[in-house]
Every structure is written in structure tokens, then in C-alpha cells.
Amino acid sequence: MKKLFFGIFVFLLILSCKDNKEEKYLPNSVGAINTLSVVIDNDMWKGRVGDSIRKYYAAAVDGLPWEEPLFSIHQMPPEIFTDFARNSRNILYVKKDSSVVAGLKEDLYAKPQQVGIIKAPTEDEIIAEVAKNAPQIIEAFKKNDIRESQHRFTRSLNKESALEEELGISLTMPSIYKIAKQEGNFFWIERQIRKGTMNILVYEMPLNSIPNDSSRVDAIIKMRDSIGKKYVPGREEGMYMITEKAYAPYVFDKEIAGRDAIETKGMWEVKNFAMAGPFINYIVEDKPNDRLLVVEGFTFAPSTNKRDYMFELEAVLKTLEFTDQDNKDLAKATTE
Image 1 (tube, rainbow, N blue to C red):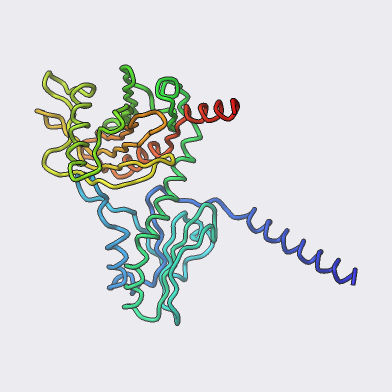
Image 2: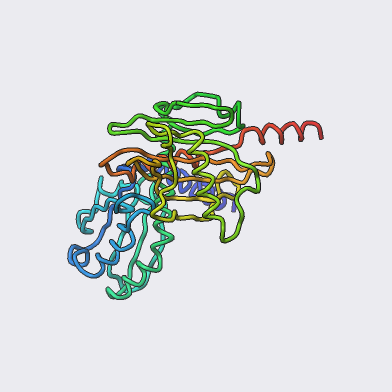
């Protein structure tokens, strides 16, 4: 009996070591941010199934001045999906099969990696599964790219401490971003790019200044325009940044840093001047500090695609942390 138990123990130990070894030796995933490898038969890719995939995975990104796709798609047939080709960070695998299978696999061939799998007996069923599962799979791909972007920031970090000292928050961003302007509790952070700038604004608003009703969008526009008038001037007097008047922005409920937030995506323009671009804005409910904390990213890059710039800004804004509350909680725990 002892020998039997010992044999089982050794077997389980070997199995555990094997699993750990396989996990340890997963290669690093590769690929540019916002790219997607689609593994599918060439004929299906050229037909209705390919059209359904492009409808969702190459849909236009919200809030950009012209159409740019969610993902830059690279298609390959299953027979060449081997070796290095399997190391892509985001993969969508679509195949005819005897049974219906749809879902996500994490770190299947590389790490970090998300693999969306769609299988079904007929093209009509595949198309139905593509439509049904697109929101979930796209969200997983986007979160994967956000995490990868944030990981890349750590290679060379901005170490300025003014945000923490003045507002009790932190943002993780590359060292190429610099505080360009600070007036009281208003911050303008800037990154120079080849044909313009990427920008981050950080400021406070009264806690109940944005109503949760049908007037919410108008209140957000009014808030942005007032901040633009006060802090983001144009070249001449009477010129300043406002929300573009021609189109209403997209507004969504989100959660940032564990707190309720409003996400707004749209276009900014300069009043009385031909200058414009996209923005993404988060209004974060900060009840412990009796305020709304606003973080916004916007890009000025004339005649240039802006999807990847805006995605990087979104990744920076989503690193938001409330450092002062951590200190308060620690002090409270100590006194208790």
C-alpha cells in the first residue's frame, strides 16, 4: 500500500513539473497593437463568412475624424498556421466542424495571448456564431492590447510626481510624456509626435456637477468647453478648444480605478479656427475626496491616422490610481 501511494505521489509530481515546464516555456506573443490574425480557409475568407468577420472586427472606431478599423487584420489559411505564426497576441480561428464551438482560450500558444475560436458545420451557422460572440471576443482582444500597451510603458517611465502631490493620483505613462502646463489643480501633459502632439488633461470638478439624466451629454460638453476656454487657448484671442458642434459625442458608462465613470469619445475643434481632432474623456466619481476627477486624452495630428495614438492615450488613462485614498485607508487602519 505504501508503494502504491508513493507511486501515485511520484506520478502527480512528474505531471505537475511537466505542466509548470510547459507554462514556463510559452514564448512571448508578438505583433503590433490593434492587429489581429484571422485563421480561416481562403475561400471562406473571400466569401460571406469573411464579410461577416470584417463587419465586426474591422468596424470603424468610434470618435475618429474618418473611418479606421478596430483591428488591422492579417488572414492566413489553417495549413500555414504553425510555428511562429501561432505567436500572435490576438488570434481568431474560424473553421467548419461537425459541432458548434465558440469561445476564448487564453495563452494557448504564447503569452499573453487571446484566441477566439468559432467552429460550426455550415457557413450560415459560422456567420451566426461570429455575430453572437463578436462583442465578447473583441472586448478580450482590446483588453489584451491595453495590458500590452501598459506593459510597454514600463520600459521607460515618466517619474514626475506633481499629479500625486497635487491631486493624489498617479498615471503610468512613458517618459516621453511631459507636464507642459500646470495651473492650480489643472494639468496639461504633452507628447511630441512626428506631425503634431498627443495630450492629456487632468482636472477636478464638483462631485454632482454632471447629472445622471437626459441632460448628461450637454453637461459634459459644457464642462469641456469651459475648461478649454480657460486653459487650452488657440493662436489668437477668442480661440480655444471646444467640443465639435457638428456631431454629438459617444457616451458610455464605465469603471475606472474601481470607481464609476463616464467615458466620452468625440471630436474637439478650436473655436474660430480650422483645427480639430479626436478626444477620449473619463469623468471618474471620487466620493472619498468629494469630487469628480477628469482625465482626458486628445490628439492633434493633421492628415494622419489617429487610431493607434488614441488607443495609447486610452491605455494611459486606464492606469489611473487614487494614491491618496490608499494613504487614508492605511492611516485609518493604524488608528483602529
